[in-house]
Length: 227
Image (cartoon, rainbow, N blue to C red; front, side):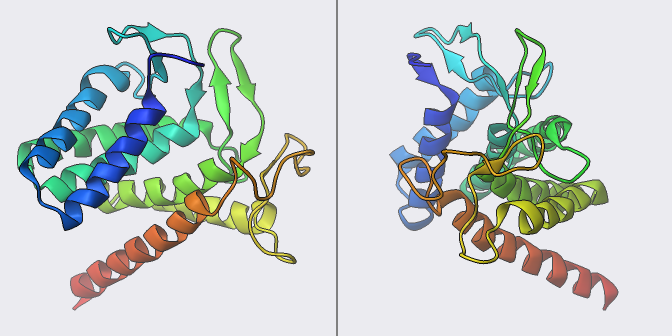
């Protein structure tokens, strides 16, 4: 939808500002990053369902849109990462609470095979029964993040099962890279790019890097607890 304001635009700005602030501790940038987190809390997160609203008009009036499970779980970890980078304790606590609730809401889209369904259309009460590559990538990181925050092993199980699904259904074990996705019957989606304008190593490459870092952190924490 060509809306005046969108969740996705703000999510990518949040990610860019977070990474920039890691190497450039500019006071104005800090304020912008703080304001983005507050915008998510005030306008973008639905505090009844903890899914994300996707589209808005100029005055932040919510416009009709689907529930995007991939964006939910992606926002969960990016918001927490931004608050952690800022080291604002009051903001961190608020975001941690939201992260866990958003991750729980996103888990509504998990199938029994560990894969994350694409979207739910509230106006037709229909689940879009496709499993695209990028929501799977975000699911690994988002659920690992939720486990790190909460210690709740169900989030770790979600991440583990999702990775097993990726290896079995999404990763191309012969030619490399990941498939665009699979349909309800488990067949590769026809006429979709393996690499193209909307398909590059951004989500899955980032997920592997972020996943490795989180798994190492979890291992170290457990080693310290056992010592």
